[in-house]
Length: 214
Ligand code: AP5
Image (cartoon, helix red, strand yellow):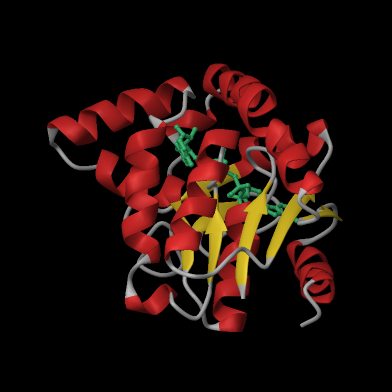
């Protein structure tokens, strides 16, 4: 199964994609996670990525498409994958079609996670992440067992740099201008499934499995 999960910042794409990946035993490919890993390195590329992400803008398409092309060609992605955070605009969606054409396959489902504006703000404001293993928590809905430390490795949790008020505003603008047009792109191709993403993470996951017929 080849699934694309779309939705605004904080909709729960990463949370649901990680669970689905485990359930279906196919890789979870999140461009945001790949870029964050590279941005944490003390290199020129790392610094440039950090600047772009902290400003809320998108990383250039050419670079992003090449990275996804390489990742989708790896052996573990041949029987399926879950794409989270990619494509992000129509140009990337067209590039994805070309990449999959070359691999002789296509996207099975495009899921749009639908949430209200208030929920986006609440989900982003309460998010904390582990800088060591990348685990994602929410201080109200999914808190760590021990105060503000990661359950996996005890590392102190942090807020993502781009979850600041100013960068969140810019991310939402960029989403509105560049990512929203993707819904029409996939709707016209009969691929788009719009799914309510309100409720607990368990409820949303059950809904997602039902939507995918799993
Ligand atoms: P990226 O990391 O993809 O960020 P995003 O799309 O803004 O999405 P988020 O990671 O913020 O949210 P999410 O929907 O995954 O929500 P989550 O599950 O964490 O991208 C970051 C940056 O990288 C971009 O701005 C750009 O610069 C660059 N980039 C990435 N991809 C790119 C691309 N293709 N092209 C160009 N540039 C790219 O959940 C959020 C919080 O809510 C968590 O705390 C979670 O615990 C909680 N939560 C989740 N579900 C629920 C629920 N049902 N109820 C209550 N709480 C919940």
